[in-house]
Image (cartoon, rainbow, N blue to C red; front, side, top):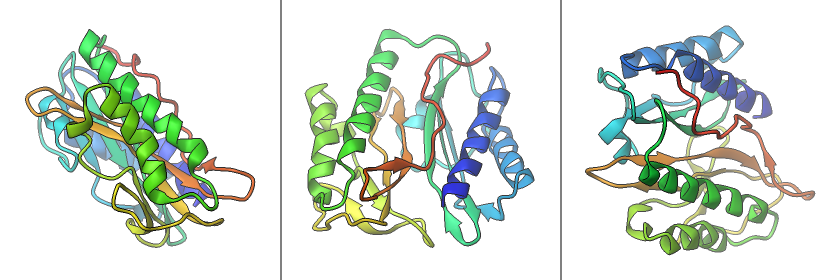
Length: 220
């Protein structure tokens, strides 16, 4: 799973390199898949999500032929398969400079993602880890826009126990691998999700997806 995480980071770098004003979502998905397979990914974990502009307000938007434009949020959700094991990795980029509202939404999601990480540890209750991230998003005024759980287990399947959600009854144990993926989705505006694949270990959580989370990166 560590290798699968590394391969997904290669896919994200391919996204960063190709994103520009006017490129189509399906072209971005193709570049990411090619880069990962070229470096040893046996398969992609699931059909990628490349959701730009208003489509980023939908958490399962898939990929379309929409042209990505200056000022768009672009949410990328991808994963690689390595020897039967999976990774799950999401970053949100922007073309050009963010508006004040875009930056605020992005920084709220990033804060939630990073606050939850140290709590993903042996013995933690899934509902409590979710609450840490959810409280941050609710305090920022976007509680109704965080419409899914913080995370899910993964390994041989994309979605496995344990879950991290407000309804979870699971307890994390050493050796579990889970996602940490808070999101804000505002219909009529845009959306942001940031996700890592995280190993629960006796010595503390270990991120298996390590791609950076800088927002201001894209060429015009």
